[in-house]
Length: 529
Image (cartoon, rainbow, N blue to C red; front, top):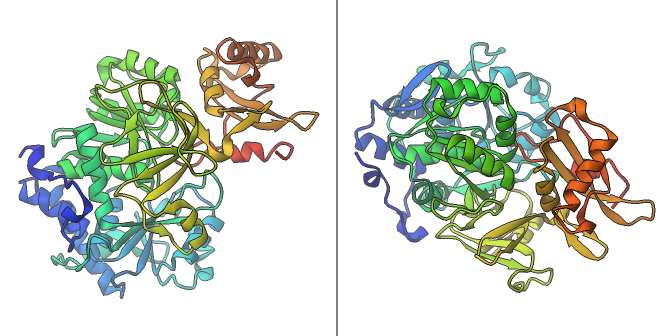
């Protein structure tokens, strides 16, 4: 059945029925479209059809009810990307239970905070990740049950046993479009994570505003996302969008590296490919990356951070497929500002996705003049309800119909939005604002630079100047002469006052699990700014 038969884009939130459950909707539409025997997901264990997924979802919902988990209770998902992830996530949604999906690369202290903050009653954890929870279980008073995805239950219950031991009963909780559906904790690129609360309608809306009209995914596509399912970006990429079109998603448990992703691309003819800028740069620098003839890319997408112009152009030249760079957020659930097919300009983040409104405001909260830099505000239907248990930050971020992004942008003469950095990343040098991303972009056009980060640093007189932390393609080339060459390289491309006064070579940069550079950690190494 054609893609159009599965999607019916609402012009407004009110056109989604008031009584609505996303999991039931997305599964029932695919079954009704004749896709029960079509692969929905492929993981290390094999291929899983839409029919098999629907049965597993029902069984997991029944398993939750049998263990005393009820509507609006929270469950904690710390899971690698296998079929068990969409089973647990959709199974909870369909049962009216609220899944809290978290980053798999955090510390025991992070998990203890999140378990306590969310008051989750049940934990589903991948076998490889269980050791981080063994010591903290007794410190989380609301946690009652642990279910382990894998072969070793560590004294608890195996996920597959819970699934197979439950009845495949067709039960859907009587939820509404505005019911609290799931939480995602912010990635922590600027400090302590916040539990971001989303509704059932928000998942469908991200597809109908971005996934369908911008990406044009069909049931014939095979999708792969470097960003994992626990990330808002990855959730749309690998679950919401492909399932909305009846497409197939390839999941990978292991950490995505250029080598592991190359192996995946050689095995599966991926047509829709999603990654973050740091991965695209590393992929291009990898000697083992696939040749153009070995890939089937039809759409490539980047988000998480702004894509450097040079990286985008080099990738398009090598693989014959443009990268659609965009920006989304955990608060808006997915991309709201993006380049699009036929409307792409490298070095920019594109234009507003239809259905979203954007404005740039100054420190006084008033719109800036054309060509001036301002903070980006978004108005759109997929905005989160709030940050859980954090009223003060909720009031600062969710301003009525508008949501603060925390990102600085300006619009160029063609109406494309140009990224200038995060609010707390901006530098004021000699009384003039400097965008760290602009300096990073200039550095990354040098042949020796793999990636870099620019932060504010105090000089001997206590004045703010830019400092660059640089990762080289060939680490052995690091030397004072190259540092000076990089400074001259920036001076030749930008106003002289913007060049980095210091260059420090590093083997790697601190990042979140979703690939965002944690500049605040680099700033913390230096003198107070």
